[in-house]
Length: 326
Image 1: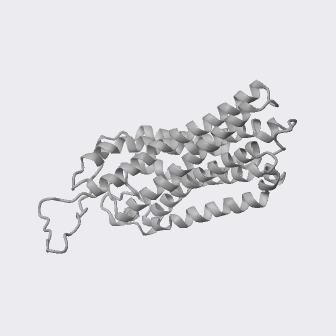
Image 2: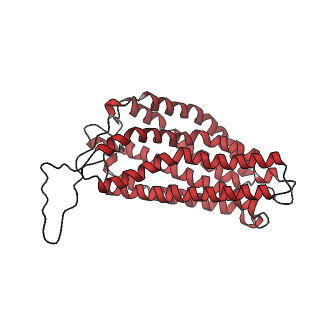
Image 3: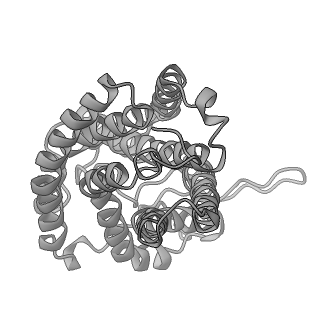
């Protein structure tokens, strides 16, 4: 991120005002020391695995939606969202392979960044919806007959998409995406921050990560507790449901925690760096790893669809007096 150059900077100090730090010098990450191959291979692998599995999942979940399955709406939307992001991976892979040079113009850079941000947070919120839906079906079995409606699921899904899409419109105004105006042609690289970006980083950590994480933990732990207390389930079924609940939480932590922790650290460092670039350069390698982990989300989501269907509360407890059919 931009750091203040100490030499040659004149700060006019009066009795009433002190000018803020001038973050004008770019803290260029060590691109020359980076090996692009691992990230290019990761993007290629995610695309190769994620494209066919998500296409299959879109078809299967569409059939579930036609059968009035509430869970199918969330999973169908999740797969469509992932397909949109997977379509951007070839450009990101070429960009990394060319030494972080974006050759397709500023508008395409901002559009690809917009799709990336939207995919991540729509996916996160839809994962919360899936867990919340299962939570209602298990913990509030009787009441869920009135709560779990197709219309409610559609409204919630559309609301999530609209809110996330509108919330990331500032991406198109950020100078970090003006690749044509940069000599190096960077596209949303961490060496070019701004107050707007830092504000979004705080919001993304709190609203897009921490709150959803709390929802996932609370709902899945409640499901586990309810399942363990049930006398209408076989021990093997209890183990499967418990393992799936833990897997959802673990998957979320692995894919999204490193990326959002680094966002938070960068935002904090922006205010206290005093013009030093040491932190920004040292955090770049962990940042690329975290970015790669967040990408894996698009390839693994279909796996969770299969597990959700095989171990869904409605199907598992269809013959039980505890849970109605999903």
